[in-house]
Amino acid sequence: MEAGAPLTAFFVWSFLDNFEWNEGFGRRFGLVWVDFSTQQRVIKDSGLWLRERLRARSRGM
Image 1 (cartoon, rainbow, N blue to C red):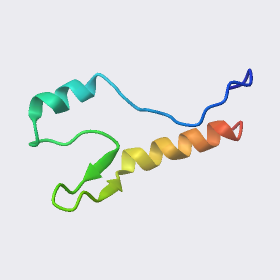
Image 2: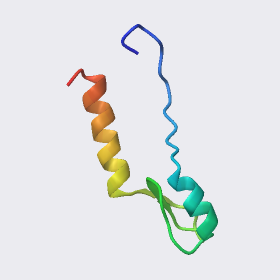
Image 3: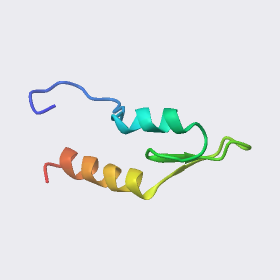
């Protein structure tokens, strides 16, 4: 980005996703919580934290 590469999206993945897949629907990990009955998505505190870090970074802070 600093060299001028366009960034239009950011995909977050980590090795913790592997643990979530192993747990099935029992435990929830990740940045967004999904209500399976309505498919409504709610950003978790960790997602809000990451959003603020990315915004600050994009502003050069």
